[in-house]
Image (cartoon, rainbow, N blue to C red; front, side, top):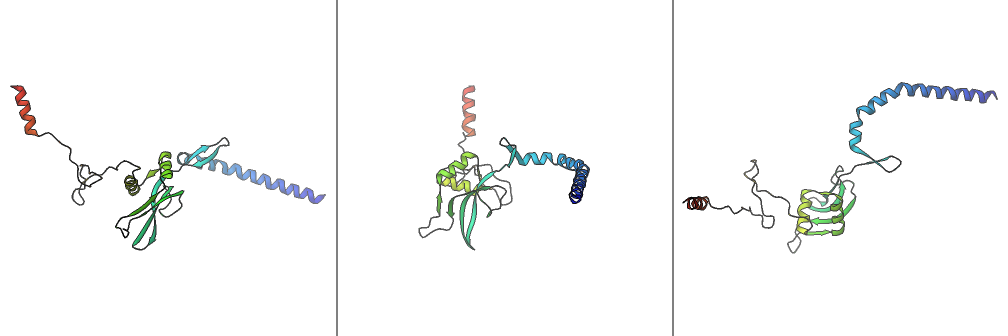
Length: 186
């Protein structure tokens, strides 16, 4: 019986030591939590009744490179925006082969239903994927602007995405406008 009493006493002493340590470190932990509370609230959102937390995820539809050196082959992926280019992905949505085949055309294949689903959920396509989805007829043409000289500011004129030429809006001639105003004044 003496052995059980010493074990209980030792257990009680150990428990008291843990409580004393917790009381000493609790203010430091609370201070640290208060310092990082604004950061944690931006990355975590509460989900469910038990107060479980889940990370926010911004999904991007982007290309992941496969193939050999000088022979690229891309897969269209739905992935978390923070994951690396060839890292983890959520789903493979299609493929794109930029090298021309025997017929001279570039090959691509898309799962239209899944691409539409990801776009409806709020996935954001990258710029190259946006151009691919425009060619497939799933998205409107991306905004394109003409480039000025190298290293200079971009031109504000819009480029027609179908033929690649700068589109100029039809403006009335200044001389015709002046003549019209002169004629109305008479």
